[in-house]
Each structure stands twice: as C-alpha cells, then as structure tokens.
Amino acid sequence: MADLSTLCEKLDYRFNDESLLIEALSHRSNGAVNYERLEYLGDSFLNFTIATEVFHHKPKDDEGALSRLRASLVRESTLAEIARELKLGDYLMMGAGELRSGGFKRDSILSDVVESIIGAVFLDAGYEEARKLVVRLYAQRVVELPPAAELKDPKTRLQEWLQAQSLDRPEYAVIEATGKSHDMRFTVVCTLVSLKMSVQSTDTSRRKAEQGAASLMLEKIRRKEAQANQQ
Amino acid sequence: MADLSTLCEKLDYRFNDESLLIEALSHRSNGAVNYERLEYLGDSFLNFTIATEVFHHKPKDDEGALSRLRASLVRESTLAEIARELKLGDYLMMGAGELRSGGFKRDSILSDVVESIIGAVFLDAGYEEARKLVVRLYAQRVVELPPAAELKDPKTRLQEWLQAQSLDRPEYAVIEATGKSHDMRFTVVCTLVSLKMSVQSTDTSRRKAEQGAASLMLEKIRRKEAQANQQ
Image (cartoon, rainbow over all chains, first blue to last red; front, side, top):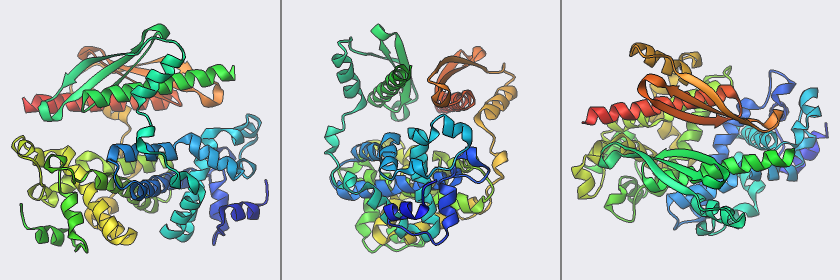
C-alpha cells in the first residue's frame, strides 16, 4: 500500500486518529473492521453537504431542480472520478481475491471509499472540517454547476438516446391509478418495442411515474451496455 | 392560523428570522414562496443527523442494520407522528382547495413540514442548533431504538402479513441476471397469486432484489388498504 501521508496531503487533512483512515480504506474482504459503517455515515453527510451547497448556489431553482443537481454530484460515477483523482485505488486494503479481480479499480468500491473517508473525517474532527473536505473534493464541480435546465429530465434523455440509435419512440401507458383525488398513485409502464424491454414505475402523478419509468429504462440500458462492453 | 409563538415554544426554538418559519409552514397551494426548498434541505439534514445518532447508539451494528434503523425513524409515518405531537396542522398555510380536502391532516404534507422546519432552523442558526432540534423532536425515539434484529426485514414482514390474512406464501422468481460475477444485477418478481398482485425489483444480489420486491409489495398493499379505508 502506498504511503498514507501522501494521501493525507492530497486530502489536505491530517487525522488526529489515523486508525479511522485505515478503517476507511479497508474493504470488507480485508476483515471484520472495514469501511462499511463509515461509508454509511459519509454517504449521508455527503448528501446533506452537497444539498446545502446546491441550495446556496441555486437560490432560484425549485426543489426538483435542486434534487437533480445534487444527484448528478453524488452519483457513483462522479465519486469514482474523485477517487481516481486521489488515486484511492493505491491505498485500498482488500483481500487477495478482490485484488486479483480488480476491485481496486471498480467504480462501486472507489465511490464507497470517498464516502468512508468523508465519514472518517467527520468522526475525527466534526461537522466543519468534514464540510470543508467535501467542498475541497468537489471544488470546481459545485461552482460550475450547469443551469438545472441543462440537466435534462429522464424522458428527454431516453428520447434522445433512442433517436441517436435510430430506434422508435418509447411507449408510456398508465396501467393503474388508485386513491382519491388528492392522494393518487399512478403506475406507468414504459416499453421499447424494438428492444423488447419494459419497466414500470409508480408515483403520485402520471408525469412523475413516466419520468420514473424513463429513468429506470435508462438505467437498464446502461447496464446492458456495460455488460456488452465487458464481454 | 394559530399563534406562531406557541409553536416556537413547542419547538423550544426562537427564530432570528421568523420569515423562515412562515416559509416552512407555507404549502405550495399558498403561493410561490413555499416550503419545498426548505423541505429539500431539511430532508437531507434529518437523514444525516439521524444517521449519526443511530451510528453512535449502535456501535456494533453493521451498515445494513443502521440503514434499517434510520429508515424506520425518517419514514413518513414517524414524521407525521411528530407533526401531530407539534399540532403542525394548525399552523399550515394552504390554499382553500387544499384546506377543504383536508390537506392539513395528510401524512405526506405533515411529514414534509417537519422537514421544512428543520431546514429553516438550519438556515436560521446553523448545524448545531438544527442538530439539537432534531434530537429534541426525536427524544425517546432514538434512545429507545429496538435491537436492529427486531426490525424485521421486508420478506419476513410480508410473510407474516400474509399468514395473518390466511393467504398463500409469496412467490419470488429471478427473471433477469446480467453483468459479470463482481458486478451483477438481479431482477426479481414477487407475486401474490391469490391477490393477483406482482411487483419487481432489481439489485446487486438475488437476496437484495427479493427484499426490495417484498418491500414494494408491502407498500402496494398498504396503499390499497389506505384506499379501501377512505371509501
């Protein structure tokens, strides 16, 4: 494993209790003391801190736009990018099997470790130091947030992806609507006939259920593509 | 609307900027300035604060148990319970249509307002005051957390509910498994033959996807029951 002091320099943070950093870097394949509890803590701290940053940077956006912006910042791929900038893979402690299978390069693990380190700093020094760390890690990413409107909604993104592939439009159908007027639930199925794929989503309005279904469909397509690329 | 100073007494918090409290109590049916941005902020603050409380109260539980405990504390029904203890319905500002349809009694709105008030206190006075408010609002609920094992997992709860209704066991079937060994996704369908209901869920393991499907099924049953009770 690489020298921890180099990592501390990159984080611009020195631990009072270095065992917290070691715990944050220990994958569960390395033993019973591992990063999972710290990741749980760091995940919720990160979500909250980014929520606050987005809230202050976007004083006029509604909560839907704020949620989309936050989601774009805390998603696995963004966290894995940050992990790679910190070269976290070099410091990860994991069992031989995980090492051999390249666990130290996997987005899911790298993103977990960014969160566990944030959780470790929160425990080590409290709210303000951990908040500063998050702001440092995100640096320009928060300052350069795109206008929320540019973060296209899932239906638009699905539509654009299908057009780029010269595929038919998706079909949306409400298959269930329950509840009284002020407390209704809509279940929408989204189908891509040409790809023989369908997903469903339930929400408090037809519009939300359609967006939810489009989002699930995009996720399904992404997984299929990732799988195809691996083979 | 009831006197705000009575509410502040119940919260044991006095606002520096009372307009934040008014915003936190304003439903979107009341106008453009409403609680939605504050709710977004309060929701993530609450999640994080409860995550921290649970983390410290349960030093030996793994992250799965911690997540279940947190979920039990921040779910809509718990928040609505807290809202009713504070009589928040008496202070809500909403349009005539929402008032007539009983919006001030609805769990979904009451729980939103608990979050928006937490967000308002965070903006008004910062992390430490908002944290203390959450701890006051939850009081015994956090101290008296059940052992995580008592929070039954969704499959067990579904099974027990079905038994109590003398209905058949649920059927679980994996309908899709994609990805390579270390990055697989499983889609499981859960079917209740006797009720002609089915839901599906996708996750990184068969076990998790089954639990996810059971959880969706419980949610679906709960909605159907709520609907039946309204009629």
